[in-house]
Structure formats: structure tokens, C-alpha cells
Image (tube, rainbow, N blue to C red; front, side, top):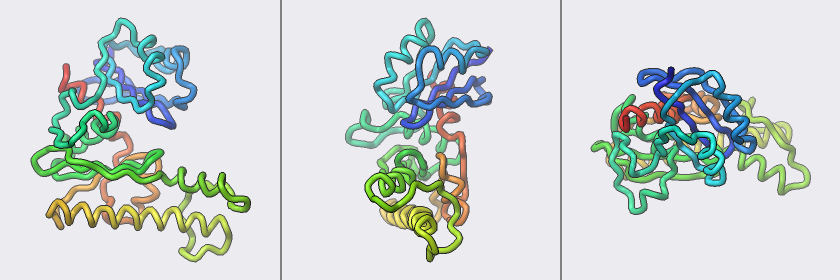
Length: 245
């Protein structure tokens, strides 16, 4: 029997995993638009659990989740939850629970000061200070948001799948869009990290952890992103479960 069912509901996908206090199990993925009591039951049919640890940034799925988890203990991640991280932020309730889970995991596994860069629907940066406090972040449009917007709002630009560009000088429309997206986002990440280091007063020693769908692609040729942790959010839910048992 698992100690927890971990549930991370993001805008694009919902991830679920059984977990002991020490280790997460196999992760199941459901498109968030398809999340229902039936799809949740199907994904977790072989898992036994008493406690669910939930991070959700999609409020309209709250009733579905409540029906599915009826009778279970539920830990909803938020600023009121024990995170192993303090919060020094004007409106803590406005911080996404996925970002709090990322912060909890990054601090527990990598120490401080640390920045988490999450390549999701949006690219988010979350900053935890030397004294283990969440102090703020940065939000930029995600890579797919940018390329999909170009496709949807122009007559001639195609929809593309993001890969490593062959060259900075595109020899086709697709190559030009690829270069703009990938090289452009590496530049965006690099400049934001420079400004964060300057404001924190830590030109050296700042840890940077990255996660999300395009973390591997962007980190591949960006030395600033040395630590890629694909399961950071889910691992954060496991850590939060332990802190709130």
C-alpha cells in the first residue's frame, strides 16, 4: 500500500503517482481536459492509498477531484502547508501550488539559495533565499505558447515541433521559427538569471534547478542550467506529504 497518491494538475497534463515516504512510483499522465472521476479511477485502479497530496492550478477540476477523493485524507498544497520553506511574499495565496512544490523539493534536495526554472505552459522562475524563504519569481510565456501564437495569428507561419536548431540563421520558415524559439529562450533564461543573481547579491553559488517539458532542450546548451530534474514537482509533493503527515 502506498503512503500517498500524488496528484499534480497543470494546465496541459495531470500527473499521478503512488508514493512511499521515500520514493515515488510510476507516473501516470492524463490530458487535463480529459480528467474525470472515470479517468482518475482508471489511472489509479491498482493503487491503494489513504492520503492524497494535491497541487492543482486548474480550479474547475476541484469538484471532480473532490468526488474522486471522497473519504480520503487530502493535503492541498498552499501557503498554509508545511513546506520546509518560509514565504516572504506580499500575497502568498497568489503563488501557484506547483511552484510551492517545486520550491520545497529544490530546497530539500539542492539547498539554498536556489532558483527553479519550470518550462511549462508558462516559463516560471521561483527564487528561494539563503535563509530558506520563497521571495518571489518571474513568469514569461512558454515556448509552445509563443510558437502556437505565431501559427494562430499569422497566415503563413506553420505550427512547429520544437527541436534543436541547425543554425541561428534559418534557411526556411520552420528553421527561422525554431531558432527564434530555442535560442531566444536560452537568451531569456540567461538574462533573467543574471538579474536575479545581481539582486540577490550572489554572483557565484546560486543553484539553478530546471524542470518541465522543454527543460532538456533548453538546458542542453546553456551552462547555467546544469541540474535538470524532470520529476521535481511530484517529488515536491512527496516531500510535502512527509512534512504534513
